[in-house]
Image (cartoon, rainbow, N blue to C red; front, side, top):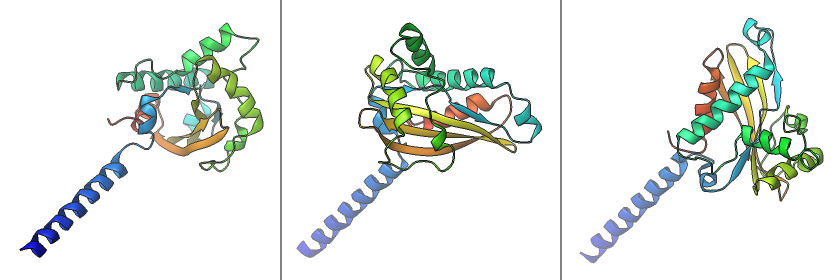
Amino acid sequence: MTIVAAALGLLGGARGALAQEAAMVASPPLATFAAMRVAIVPVQLWRADTTAWGKGVEWASMRLAVDAAIGAELQARGLGKRWAYAEDIVRSAKRNPTYATDPYALGVSRWRGAPPKPDDQVPQVFADNIRPLTALGDTRYALIPVELRADGDRVVLRLVLADTRARRVVWAGDLASPSGAAMPDSLAVRVANLVLEP
């Protein structure tokens, strides 16, 4: 009887561990940052392709639409003003022109090819440009939309999460979304899904 009870206990413990592991796998990859203060800078770069959609894009307007959609989606999911959004970063830089750098030109071109890996050091130019912007908002981490690129009938957004004090990469990945008029909102949902459950 004792052996059976012990076996059942082990089986229950194994099931509990598997359930916990499954829950950890299912949680959004950046969920731990939802409780922290993170700065999201504006989308940095655009790369068109030869498709009609990519060639017809007006970059300044599309960038504003994507930045606004990401901020709105994260706030709607409950982050509120805990994070600093692209419009906050731009406003702060305008208020402090002698201290902050241009939030639209942070020097991320090295990340256009292969995405960086966790624990990679961030490029020196980027590190020097981003730190004043995050320091103004008392923020350690920055989510950087490195590049939005057209890829046939879809767009791909490269994102990098960086620790601006330690000057290292925390996370990096690419998100794909169908192109077209609904793209900013569709992409914003995918960004928010990295942080919070739908």
